[in-house]
Image (tube, rainbow, N blue to C red; front, side):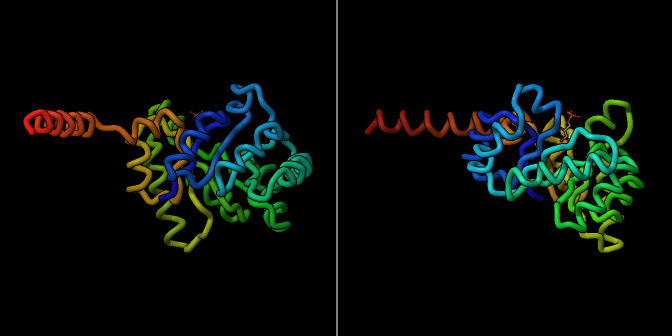
Length: 216
Ligand code: G3P
């Protein structure tokens, strides 16, 4: 499973890219609004930090307008994947854009049927939102498993981006369920990397080494 970072914050992308683990970036209008930045302002730096796909979402809602906006977004950089909302208009837009060779990430997916439709529209990526399903007492990780099973059974090559991840267990479970990619907020990436036994074990090693040096 690949790891993408789910943020528009350049400091977070810069730091996480140093770890050598990030294969892509996902943004959305809320993440960009949080930074008070338009994608045009930050894309060059993001591109310099991460080689893989950078997801940028359209804000139009009608199919024709989404197609027009997506074509402009796709011009920003080589590795843009245009985020398209999972609506009937979004399906129409994604199928046209993919036919023109523009990679689409169909987002705001909350059911296996939505994921299947997005795949049949030719989407390069689908983004089921795990955390938001959990937030309403549904089974977000279960959805990842269902979509992964359906795509594997029918040999569908659309890639599953497990999204809206709230903690390290979501990432672990997304991998167990067969998601191709997990897009992870920076704070969750930090939590994934750390473990109290690693910290205490390292401290013990260093303490023992220092005490031995003292005896030499
Ligand atoms: O990539 C989608 C993700 O940013 C949504 O996360 O936490 O707003 O549900 P969240």
